[in-house]
Length: 78
Image (tube, rainbow, N blue to C red; front, side, top):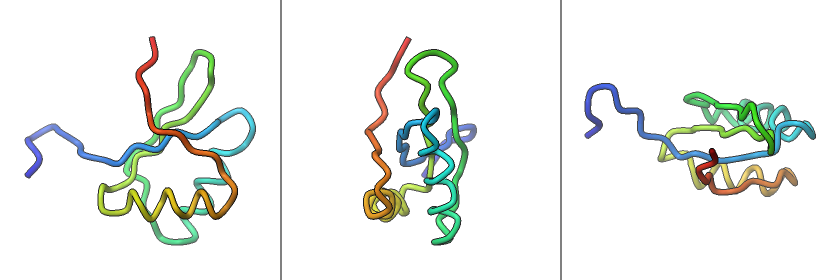
């Protein structure tokens, strides 16, 4: 059970500047996989982290792979 104010998601990092984020957004929407939220880095490397519900994480990653979109596990950056 999540605590108040805590959002539990499955984060997936994709490239932003090359259009992969837009492709990923469209692919997820087409398969009715809801995006909880996204974040975009304002420093290099400009990437987006897409957050989906934990139960949709594996399905979303498989879908992105099938669509030819490179994704990465999120890592902290400073």
